[in-house]
Length: 72
Image 1 (cartoon, one colour):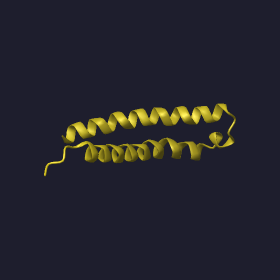
Image 2 (image 1 turned 90 degrees about the vertical axis):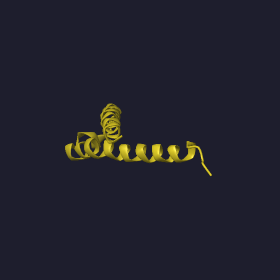
Image 3 (image 1 turned 120 degrees about the vertical axis):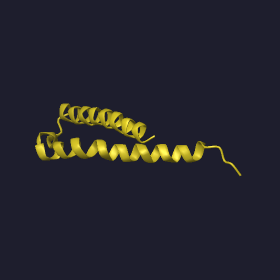
């Protein structure tokens, strides 16, 4: 179970990193000036995927608790 959790986390981090980079590139194409600041983009590339991972795991836990059969 721990190995599966780590594997899912790695896959989600990989996808979240790609999505974060795509959003930053799209913002740069629209002419936003903050994209040229290396400090901001590096922070977003490092912090964005981790924040998304925490949100995704929270959503997974919520769905698991709601969709689980209740045994009384």
